[in-house]
Figure 1: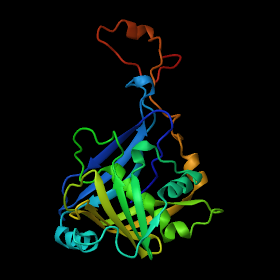
Figure 2 (figure 1 turned 120 degrees about the horizontal axis):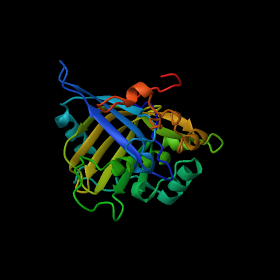
Figure 3 (figure 1 turned 90 degrees about the vertical axis):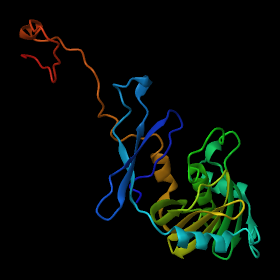
Figure 4 (figure 1 turned 90 degrees about the horizontal axis):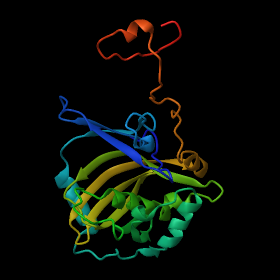
Length: 269
């Protein structure tokens, strides 16, 4: 479940923390994702702010056989690609609309290569941008590819119902029934199908139609372009940081033979 969107600042970096708990009695693990700005000036004693929790969830095993069947039936190697009856979508125009609404994608996340629409379904082809796939990638699905696949939502009913006056952006909120069946490559095929007014199912296959990932339901929430812009680089708790302030120790402490640390030094101590 998404608690707060993560907006990358134009300058500086962001530290990410993913915590996975021990197995509980039901054989599941809780997971949480936090972030904070990078340390100021590289000083380990001056962190860029407190950790902000962005998402929580539950990890469990099972469901691989069902998800594999779902993927192969829709994006299998024997089926036509793009699917018959689908109409091509202008990807450049789609990214232009996203930029107008405050969601500007940098080169590393501009992964959507082609998209097609058939009724309410969206089919997409995503690829890791040139220069980003160097070295080993220990991902079941490259995170930039999954993010790029969701950009195609703007070409479907969710994007069509979004008037220019509203300037609303749909963001991922809650994932359920997520099953990874095999590691994916640098080029993937994706199908996005509506399962509710504000939710879609997702199936992902590699370029040969072999199953990679399935999501029963991804719930989405609308936010305004203004909300996105306000979150750019804002650290609401940035005033509360740890800092070292010089302090003259009291006379009785000067006689101490062992090293000492004074906390909360005030006049009269």
